[in-house]
Structures are given as structure tokens and as C-alpha cells.
Image (spheres, rainbow, N blue to C red):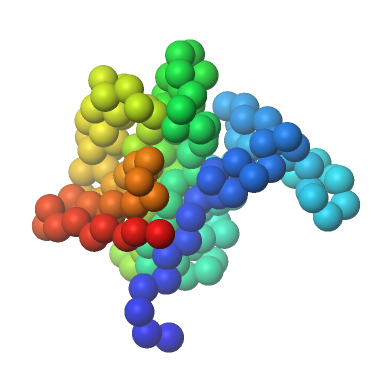
Length: 154
């Protein structure tokens, strides 16, 4: 096929299942909406799925909370997402032809967003980019190698 195949790590999809989901250090535990069985999505499993799909752009699994969340829950989600990026990088098996992007967390707190950005950039040195979301329903992909940004509006 032509074009770019981009896959998301799975954290954002968990938002739709928040009533059924629990974020833990291990991963995201949730009940299947189909049969109620307990499932666990880990950073390693997310990478294995995306590697198998052949995604050109892969997103890390992140601990997603509403951008309006404040306080310790937001800080915990940011810190966990940084730790999960480490696990995603270790589990990523096709660095030569698949690009792993980190997802910046920190909600509306500029200090936390900057901290998250700096920590992820240190981890992603030599990797392709970062994924940033905003309240204006805009996504930005930044290529760390060239500095070019792609803005997607939805």
C-alpha cells in the first residue's frame, strides 16, 4: 500500500473504556466490552502488536487522563508514561523500518509538559519524533531528526 501507516499505542482507546479500565504500573487492565473477560495491555504487548501490523509510525502506550485533570493523577500519568516509553523502546523490534513516537503528557500544566518533553527527548535521541495533543483537536508530529512538524487537525 502507499502512504504512511500510523498506529496508536492503545492508551487513548482506553479512555473510552475508563469505566472498565484500571491503569497500573504493569499496564492497562480492562474488561472486554464483548464478553467481560479481563484483559491487560502492556507497553510490550502494544509494541508487539504494532510491530506485527508493520506500522510506519508507532505510538507508545501512555497513561491517558483527561487534559483537564489536575494534581497528582496528572503527574502520575505523566511519570508513568515516561517509564512506559522506556519499556516500549526495549520491546520495539523493528527500529530499522518502524518509527516509535513518544506522547507528551502533563495536561495544561506548562511545567509538567516541559519536563515530560525534556525527558522524552533524552530517551528518544536518534528516534524520529514526539506526539503532542492540544485542546484545539490538533495533533502535532515533530521529527526530531529534521525538526519538521506535521500538524493534523480533526
